[in-house]
Image (cartoon, rainbow over all chains, first blue to last red; front, side, top):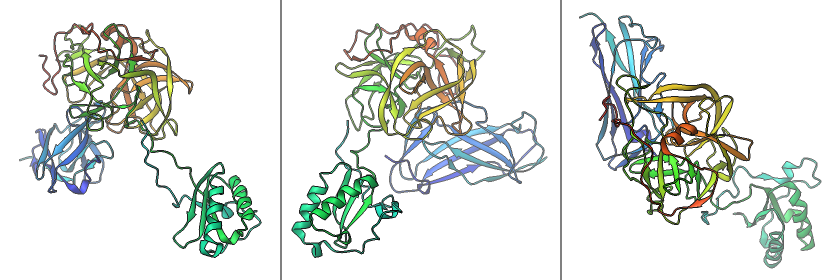
Length: 132
Length: 372
């Protein structure tokens, strides 16, 4: 059973357009089966492992969800019926990977679904950190 | 078990005209001549004789009707020419190509293995993991895999294991028989549940043969190869160490045989996305290649001289880029599951299993952070 090809899936990451400095940033990652058949995904982790990357607009990474994390190396077979979506949620506390608060400004957020092979990547979503 | 399907690698881009390969060969490149011009009976007789030669791969006519003979190497070509000459077929009447030998469909880490051995794929529920190693245990002939490669981590659930999958062989090879509970307190950090090994034991079904071996891949270490050619024989097990150094190896169903260097030993490791903490674990890194991937959970970790394996632990996790893996030492596995002998072959008897030495007071539950 091959893993589902990425063109069978639509990946999307949702974040608020704008958040106040220091506020937690809710991140929702949707993996949607856009075909008319059931797909079997080969995913990493007993609970599905996914990464979230926050970048500055110049491409520099400021935070990576799984940086320094150890993930169980189990392979999970997840079926997605036609039209069904996996919904994965995370929160970013606006701390950089080094543990310091990030500056207000424009950022991009993208998500990665870890699979048996290469990760499946979402398009980036814009995020503005600015005082209300 | 090998299937009879033949590899289809005839006349691929990998084939090379033997005359092109031997720059000093006396014959010029032969113009194409059809078998019909040679004479069908003579051509057929010649091919039959040619195909009796060692290291000939295939023989017949190509789409244009020219005789073509595939051989494994240029040294075989002279034998082919001799036969052709004997049958009165001129060099212009045939073509010789060097091609790879054709094998039976490849045995891989993800195909059926009986007897079973370490490093091969196992399947339970909707998960795939790796069989760590086979053992004799007081409860019966068993294999060891990860605690998180069970239906309920940290409790005995009796989940059925299939090899390689239930769709390939619907008869389970074993059932989970021991997976000690995780504990709170003591060395365990506040809010965490702990063990010293991510290991569980599965009791073999009656009649399932299992060897003291770890599957060995064809192309060697860190090649990404999953094809199996032989095995490491498990000739020793490390019953006492909790710290390690140097190069260590693993074989798993996803990334195959890989190796890296120990960077930290006997360190506490938190499992991402859970409240689980594993104590006194060893980290192994190889910055230049992927050494772990999803599905490698349960892989045997060992040192080797290339032939024999000294079993030192079981892999359970890694970083998201796959350049670092974590393993629990064999000593801790044995401390938690009871005495294990990984050095002998055996056959499942169904056992008289009564569980192991677990004695924790709680069970991890995903991301809850609670102890139940």
